[in-house]
Structure formats: structure tokens, C-alpha cells
Amino acid sequence: MTNKITQPIVLMYHSILAPNAPAPGEREAGAELYDVSAEKFRAQLSWLKEHQYRSVTVHKNLDVFSRREILITFDDGEKNNYTAALPLLQEFGFTGHFFLIAKRVGKEGYMGWDEIRRLLAAGMVVGSHGFSHEILTNLLNTQIEEELSASRKYLERNLGIPVESLSIPRGFCNDKILRMAKETGYKYIFLSEKPAAPPAGHTSQPGRSRVAGQAGCFSRVAVKSNWTIDRFAQAMSGNAPLKEKILVSCKNSVKKILGGGAYDWARRMMLKIK
Ligand SMILES: [Zn+2]
Image (cartoon, rainbow, N blue to C red; front, side, top):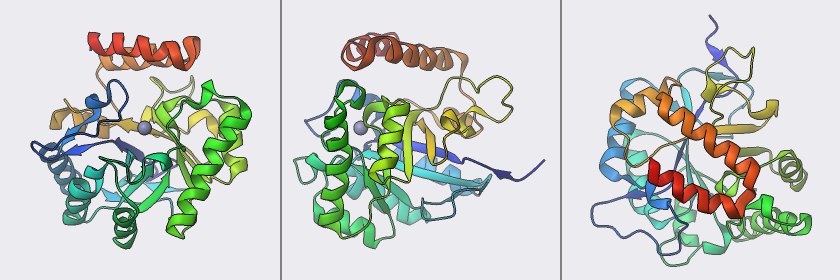
């Protein structure tokens, strides 16, 4: 068996919350499901260290990964990414990849430019998460272009670095958006949750398959607030309980059928079932 794989496990975090720390006000419904406590985050990093995982970033050669290489990503750019996640990443010697909503930089509860510059100085990587967090599949082509391009330019201008990676806001994506993102200059595109099952005939583990066979596209494993360390370990082995697999599969189907607006409503309903 080869030790090389074509996609590493990419973990997707949002908030890392210290005890009694308030979450930002301007958040979407259901965001709290992804609030991971600092205590749980520490236990997860400790587990990764213990099992000899190393974090890598998009700056490495992304064609081939070894099995112990992972990416640790954070969406939305909340302030707790700087105050709570960064010190823990540093303590365990990991590198994080932070995707910022351009319009929310410096807003209450979100990181400001100085904090983001300190992330970069600490060896972390920054990417775009759209300009306003709008669901791209709901927008006209000119608006999609604006979301993709304006966010990139805004971050580049303020930080003085090339922004080469994009995390698709709220996971709504299709081939057109992937193509437009590539045309805008993004080399690496991160999607939300992995597909429920690998395509027929595909033998690798689901978390490790390339999305739609597109080079530079990565599916991610969304770490949830209620995960125990055993559930985390299960995710690292590429497995999810059957109940969750069915739920992800339902979510993906509803996303396709309903599109963004109605999905928000359906999502709230499904989150309740969970
Ligand atoms: Zn987001």
C-alpha cells in the first residue's frame, strides 16, 4: 500500500470559544453548531500530535501528501481565531489556514488587520471567504465575480500578500463557480463537507477523494461543537456514523434541489432533528 495520497484530511473549524467568551453577533442561523470550545480544540490538537499528524499549508507542493499530513482551516475570521485558536496552534506546533469574510474584517467580534498581520507573522496562512459571505449560487455572474474578485483584491491590498485560496461561503458551489474562482486567480478552493460517499469505483476513503475530480479543490471535515474525542478520531480515520452520513447526503440533496434561500429554512429544520 502506498503511503502517498492525493488529498489530505482538511479540518474545518469556525469558532474556538474560550469559557464565557461571547460569540460575534452577526452570524448565520446554526453557526453555534460549529463553536468548538477551547478545551475540546486543545484535546483535538493533542490527539493529532500524539498520532504524529503534521499540519501543512497550501504553500507546500499540493500534488502529493503523506498520510500524516493534514490542513487545519478556520472559516469566517472571528476574533476568537486570534485570541483562542492561534495560541493553541502555536503551543502544539501546528499551522492554521484562516479564511476571512472581507467585509467583516475589523467588525465587532471579528479579527482586525493588525490581528491578521500577526497571524501571518506567526506563519499562518490567510485566504478569502468571499466579500460578504453571500451564497454564491444565488447570485448573478457579475455579482459572483465581484464577491470573488473584490474580496481577493481587498485582502491583498491591506495585507500586501498574494491571496491564492478561497473557501466557498456556506458550501454552495457548482462547476461554474469553481471555474470562475479559478479564472479570478484562486489556485486552491476549499469546499464544506465531504460528499457522503465516494463515487462508484472509487476506493479511497471519502474524506480523501478529490471533489469532482478537480485539481486544487478540497473537501473538508466540519468539526462540530458536540464532538467527543472519539468522534474526532473517527473523522480522522475517514469514517462517520451512519446517521451523520445520511444527514450529509440529505443536506447535499436539499442544497441541489432548493438552492440557497429555501435551504436556509430546511437547514434549520434538519439541525433540529440532529
Ligand atoms: Zn462561513
